[in-house]
Length: 204
Image (cartoon, rainbow, N blue to C red; front, top):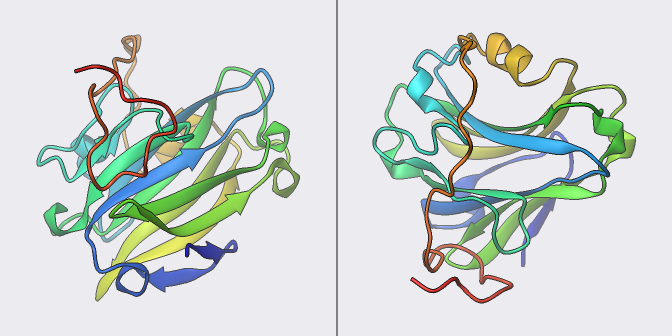
């Protein structure tokens, strides 16, 4: 049974699951609104001190593959694989965010969620909707953070700027080049830790 989180709730990951190989699914949508969903790997000062730990459509995994972008699956707009025991020591927080690409604001979003799945079972879910936001163009959805042990926090904090402003907030550099077209990071069947797919897996 998944534990339902409200904004501001926190829990030790070990209280949710004994596993460290986790699937994180984000569902977010709105009429005519396009979203970029990212994960920022932050240091003890909550800064993006190593750009290789900004995992998004142009950089779908961290160097040791502790954080991997999996794409849309199982009803989720975007999904990640997080292997907590492979996250390097300097990374103390993983912040999952959604930003609007183009026009729109967070008050337009339909009911959505961020969820954690372990061993094919959903163990935690934080649900949100547009009524909680106004003109913000980004939202910090949830964090994995290290405080003696890994913990999860349901954040749900709106942010006025888009992805560039969020990058600057975390101390990252905004690249000037045109982003390349996103490529699906993987094909074939979903890994065993992921939730069961709602459609048949593509042929390998």
